[in-house]
Length: 250
Image (cartoon, rainbow, N blue to C red; front, side):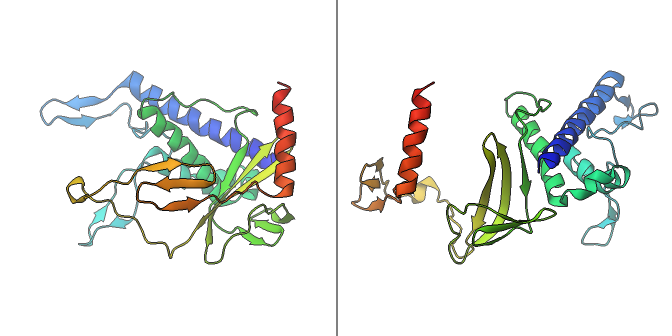
């Protein structure tokens, strides 16, 4: 798993450098425009991808409802994801990593770019201190105190919360910490109906809520939500005392 983290970090940095390089080439060389038709013409920069990533910028073989061939543009994330088979052929050590993990590594960069466009900082190159995790999207299994991770196999782990019946595993994040490895499992219950928001004109009353001590939430209509008290066990209380002593020393 440590080897995976190192390889994924280099892959993330390569993808980020690829997008920065492509943007720099496009920005410096610019776009040529036909003034009569006002269409872009790039006779000198046709090899530069306008989407900011090296690879095929068009989807091939796609057809619409009428049967006509259409080739929509790919975004940078799709370009780099579709290039993963070529990456595995050129760099065999990438073939040892699960495909969904590599895809989520590219989507992680997409999320960083979306945050930048929303007004936050520009994506930065990762080092060992700020790149310590990877995510599985399928193939994860849990049986008691054992967990199965694709391409890694079965291994023992401390199951802090058993998965309730009816829930399915949607994703699994593996994170490295100073004292070991931690697994976060995202689960889904399909029996829970989707919540649909109502327009303000259909809202007839508003319910206020307040955080409580013995109860988790008190509502203005008299209803109360019980406190699950995940840290009420003897072992959790001992761990909490130890952590509080560690914090007090800083």
